[in-house]
Length: 501
Image (cartoon, rainbow, N blue to C red):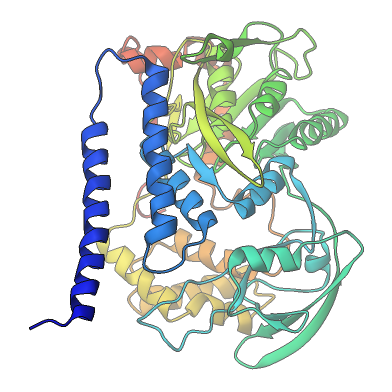
């Protein structure tokens, strides 16, 4: 038999249950769409329901809830419901990082870093900050910080409990200010390094002269700094009396629309560069080339693309292809044909797809990509070769060789590769040599181009030297033709690299 206190508790419990039931009923009856109802009124109704749920959770959840956590969770869920990977809610830290990326400049010491997440299978793992690579010619690079080094402390504070956002906040700061980092190198070498912060400019362009007066222009990303760097490179090529040009867009993830339009304009004297189309008319635009040409119209231009070429890099490749200005060599691009805008919400914000872009031939390449005129693919490893390579990587054979032979000669590399092959590795000599060379260069400045192992770059040079190059460009199908199949007879040629290369 229950006493009066028990009955009082029961009545209170049933009162809460009744309130919850009434609230849920209100949700269930009010949630279905009211067909024919004014859209604004309907939106307001959903907003009112959301506000009621938000307040109810704040007041009644078993533990006290931070309204900011609820806000961020609700915003993230709303953008996730769009099913668009490019439309997303941005936290305060994400807004800051995005600003650094799009402007291309920030105060720091110039390190690409990563931080492992806790792994229940590896409880012994120390969650230090690992140096992926120092950015060339920055304070961190000049201090001798190396790839593979780990940061255990920042200004005496342990890094293990810090999130990646917290690490970035501590490493970045005003130029000319100092930060002291504790480095763990290898298994037991620990030392402090005090580094003076500087204005870091994320590399956007690299340049070099290839044989036979061929300029090599690698565009890494499209930021506000890319246009002046491309102009500097073209002026430098001109001083070197260049006769043709390779534009390398491989693994370029994109960037700012205005930046790529300005760079495309350097190659084109008229015609459409790109157009954008949206459900809102004010978002529709057609971007035309201006007559202030920089790269001569008779200059032979080859553009290198691969599956890592996305967004703005696809705009440039599509514009030069459709305008018969360049010949595309490599692999099919990623296929991101949408344009996003970033809008702030206080310290947070969001990125929303507002329109889709179309190449000059009126092709949208979203989820399709742009096919090259001449396809050159890296040979695929067989399952046996993948297993063999995994075994070599797990045994750290490349790092061990580089540590023992930091100035290895080509002959030493040749002998070592022969030894690996004799020991049973089925991986091709070319791949093994390339991996060893890459390991040797991790602590130095990597070469801008690679004529020893880069199949696509070598194919580009052969294409430029072809006497029929102007015909190849003029008769190459447009992006739209390839999508519709109208150019089936002129489909992409394929260069077979062969599995033994």
